[in-house]
Length: 266
Picture: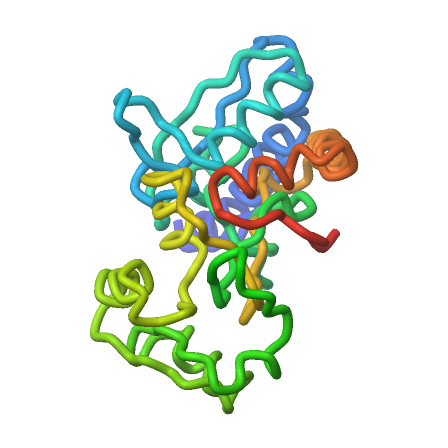
């Protein structure tokens, strides 16, 4: 009896390991791009609580730059797009568990995430910047010297502005709403804010004279895809590169973020 238990102790883990390896091999062998094309359906995880990247609009339908990019990829593939609402914590697990074919959710590329999913080239900027009127001819940090720049106290923009443009005159406010109100009322000539705030303002008032002047920081967005799907990654990259070349990404970025996509990294 003791010998049988000892053998079981050694044999069972080996069998379980072999079964696990077999399952892993089967799962990774599935070609997601082939499945998408066969089903004529692309399942995309998108945010619905983070304007202007993804949110529920007045029509009660998802909209935003992430949604538009998802539709662009579906159009180029010639398939239907099924939008799957996700939150920040579950957008990667949805890929790992096969609930989505890709996630387009203002996702940044990190070393930790790269261990479990793959990334496309960048499709949109995510930046903090100094914004102002088109009448203000400011393109460098040095030109902000002596200029009043509204900024939310203690924010990343506050730190970045202080570091990169020490001769500007920060006008610090306690929250984003106060910073925006000061700019709109003419209390400040410029404001240092993040992409979501600028995009939301542009969406609410398309005629607003608000343009990016100087970028403070940029952490681009990437399409996340299941690990070990080189065909899918290559196809998505081809679509994004073409959209960069023909100006489509710049137009989408202008529409939702108030500034062109610019020179996004590969």
